[in-house]
Amino acid sequence: MSEISSSCASQVITCKAAVCWGVGEECKVEDIQVEPPQKCEVRVKMLYASLCHTDIVISKGYPIPLFPRVLGHEGVGVVESVGEEVNAEDFKQGDIVIPTFVSECQECENCLSSKSNLCLKYPLTFSGLMLDGTSRMSTVKGQKMLYHLFSCSTWSEYMVVNVNFLAKLHNWGAHGTTTPPLSHASFLSCGFSTGFGAPWKEAKIERGSTVAVIGLGAVGLGAVEGARKQGAARIIGVDKNEMKREKGIAFGMTDFINPENHQSQHDQDHNKSVSELIKDCTDGMGVDYCFECTGVASFINEALVATKMGKGTAVVIGTSSSPTLQIDFLSLMSGRTLKGSMFGGLRAKTDLPILINKCMNKEMQLDELLTHEVPLTDINQAFELLKQPECVKVLIKI
Ligand code: NAD
Ligand code: ZN
Image (cartoon, rainbow, N blue to C red; front, side, top):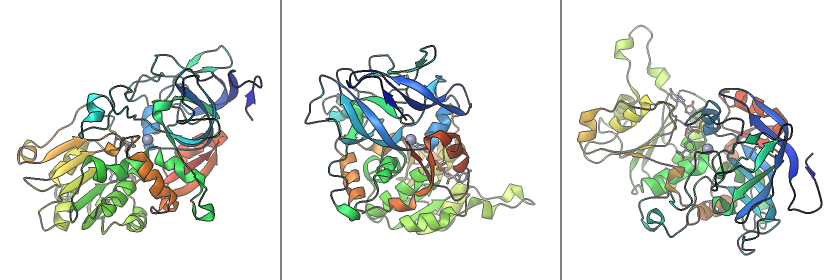
């Protein structure tokens, strides 16, 4: 259990956190110190967290190897204390919150444009530090500084976050038994919301569109759900894991392609690519929109080629650790659009609350995402579980 060094909330807290000490190393659950929140920050007691594929990519040192580091960027918790400049109407002790990795100042060039959700005033950071360039966490032994992950680090009993990277869950539980368990809210901080936002806010798909989603993890299933809610006529899911067929259908997928069912060991030269398989499903035309949600670099080109000539759009959501890509020039020249997306184009203040409300009203099937649960002390098991075919989301009980 964590221990508050004094009854006063403005003290350093010693608590348990999952620390990754180097590239590809297992996490160590150990005592760390978490400083009080500064002026525009909040300290949160984490209740639940979850594992997103991005945590795995980052534990492998991508895009910048910053260690030792407290991982985790999905979660839900309760405000323990607030900095002196935090407006009580915004956040106060006891509020239930989820961290976000993008912010929205509603003033900067990007926030004022309808084209971007990437705030310039409070930018998405890859430095592993707070906006002032320092950390709020250190080891107990030796007082070594610990890096944060994005604007937060959720695999810790306590974490400090700038208020601009926080969404409040108003009245969660007020609907009594009809409200989903609070743990589900942790899935909204990144993966599922990112996928859901991509057809809605990033691609702004039209009703009746044909859509393909490559990769049916939490992100891809979110994209299937988002496409369904936007009125897509067909939603083709692609995954090498056969167990994702059933999951995809639960979220509104209309067709499933398992590329491995179309591969022949004897005739590898004639094996069909993912884009060919998607085109086969659409009379050779391709889809209006294709969402890449695996992080497999070569699928970015496949996503582009799988879209319609003259007007198709491929949206890249999966995080590839490959720094460069090969793109088919003629496909691009033939009027297709290739677009990258952070957080599915969702704006932290404008759009995320809409999604939270949909979740609270059970308009989305978040139950389908939760397949496994581990305590924080077994965090390394979560990495193993995510490799299991039946796994979608591992909930981490803090
Ligand atoms: P996940 O591991 O749960 O799901 C990935 C899915 O892709 C799995 O179902 C897997 O079977 C499938 N897949 C992998 N390789 C495949 C292949 N070769 N052929 C067919 N299917 C394949 O991951 P997730 O948490 O859903 O995240 C997906 C990706 O999105 C990751 O790269 C993650 O880093 C990235 N991500 C990006 C953002 C963003 O804002 N851009 C946000 C969250 C996650
Ligand atoms: Zn994530």
